Image 1 (cartoon, each protein chain N blue to C red):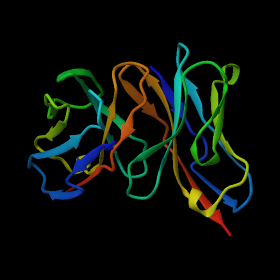
Image 2 (tube, chains in turn red, purple):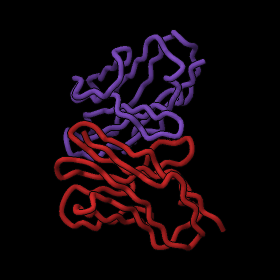
Image 3 (spheres, rainbow over the protein chains, first blue to last red):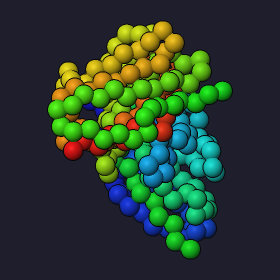
Image 4 (tube, chains in turn brown, green):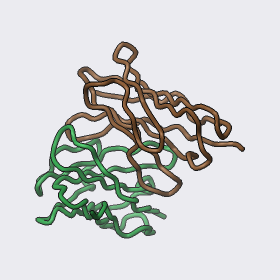
Length: 111
Length: 113
């Protein structure tokens, strides 16, 4: 069965600093991978997705992620964070009809 | 284009009661998936409906059931509510099966007392 690990429960960064959120997956075939963002009490908004092809994918709000098959990773990056990026971030792997999510990383931005 | 909508936004029930949550899929989508998100956790897959048929189910007991209607809207029903059913219930719609992107609604917050 597939699984997703987000090793960082909570990350704090300064506004304007760079960001990297880690995601590792366990899956027996080529996965399709997603990053979603969730503001408090809200649903999930898709940031970006990887199905195949170029391993560096661009998303909304200036986010990007890189698929590394050798490391089973799909880390999310942003070169310069804004206060509005404070939220919960979820990595997910897709198999047929369902998504399997990690436990999330809460991002706090300090001035 | 109308996004995924869910109703109600919040509701409070007592243990042993039954509840029905509703979801309207995004225009052009024929697949609806339901997820349960407990506080501080990632969403857990409950089941998916594709063209009115159940198309996959997660590790949830039979008291969690669903329906999909000809207009592709969907209901999630939970019988004999337990305290642990308190969670945010998320609905997601997509345009088919397999490698499709799921778009999520705002969720329904269920509290069981």
